[in-house]
Amino acid sequence: MTNRQRGFRDQLRETQMRSPNSNHILGTGLLASMLLAVSFPARSAETPPSLKDTFKNYFLVGTALNRSQATQTGGGRRSQELTDMDVALVKQQFNQVVSENDMKWESIHPRAGDDGYNFAPADALADFGLANKMTVVGHTLVWHSQTPNWVFAGTNPPPASATNIPPPAPAPAVATNSAGTNAPGARRPGFGPGFAGGFGRGGYNGPRASREELLERMRDHIHIVVGRYKGKVKVWDVVNEALSDSGTTNVLRSTLWSEIIGPDFIAKAFQYAHEADPSAILRYNDYGLENPMKRRKLITMVRQLQEQKVPIHAIGSQAHINVATTFETMDQTLAEIATLGLPIHITELDINTAQGGQRSTGADISGNASTTQGGQVSDADKKLADVYEAVFRAFVKHDKSIDIVTFWGVNDAVSWRAQGKPLVFDGDNKPKPAFDAVIRAASVAPAKLP
Image (cartoon, rainbow, N blue to C red; front, side):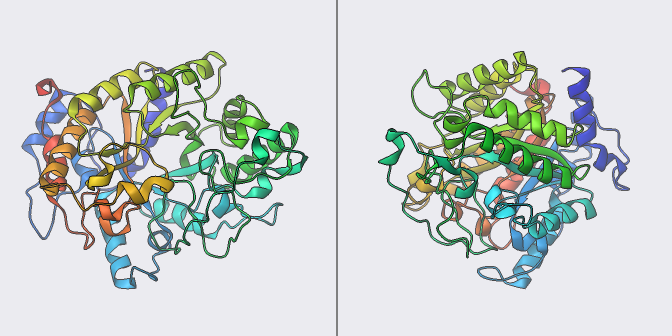
């Protein structure tokens, strides 16, 4: 780890060091683990141990918030009482927050022009995090999905290969307090047909912007959004899910970003974000990195960016996994990503227990219905607990590389994969056996791990 990267790690933990309840000195290794095991908090139904305190010597533990939780206002599927319980749990358990949807382009910048921004929900998220001494993460600046059509529109005819691609079927409307997704096709009420569906390459098939026009829109958007939260948002997902899921030779997926600008759209996005906030930690974020082929693509792409001196500071591994995932798989994944010499952030952790999702580590909402069907696997609670303990043992083993572990949702009821019951708190915010398993993983000293 370079001095610059070590500085980023210290910066991430600065908030917790300033907290009046954090009079410890952050550290790692066997001694810290032994002390943690000795002082391990007693488990009780009334006052469960907190994730943020249990792993304070290892990494930050965060969660994604939906709009209701960030604004602390109930509605829709979640009453004010339940929302208040959600918020109380967040304050008790986590020291890092990220918005599920409200910093994505279609939410924060739905219309063209300087007056086309809607900052209120994102402001609420940032204010919530800062008020509670939490590290705030911004998600996401450039993505092929959940981006308005106006971003790509222009006067240049689309290539013939694009004109015959049918637009995606509209996805169901999503209430503003429902579980957000990091997935193509999600919609906000009132946005209508002017948004790219994002199934793979986006639903917009009309006349396109030029390379110069799209670069200008990207730069302006990044400068305004990152600039607004400079000093407040410590980490940004700059580019999201640019790697191809298919084939062995295509490193990047085909999207309107790559087709109009070219593959250097990634480098440009990082350049613009660094210009807007030179102190922010800038990361590339993707799913399915447990797959060796996709992991190789990640390493190839990031090494090329590093050779070009692109300011990429961390790797985000979403870790939308299932109960078939093993310690060995996660251990190998982390070990290989660590060869890039960059901090690793586990950005969207959940473990699907639905029978339909046991062969998938994807994050597309287009496939979410099938991956959460068929009921839960047999003995789901035990299998979920076993896998959470295994992956957290791997996280502890690689704690020198990992700076953040973020759950994608506060509890099962608000999860984007609610039917898969993938989190460690149930819909009533009660800890599941998986929570106890995660806590146990912290008491295992790295020297004892396989």
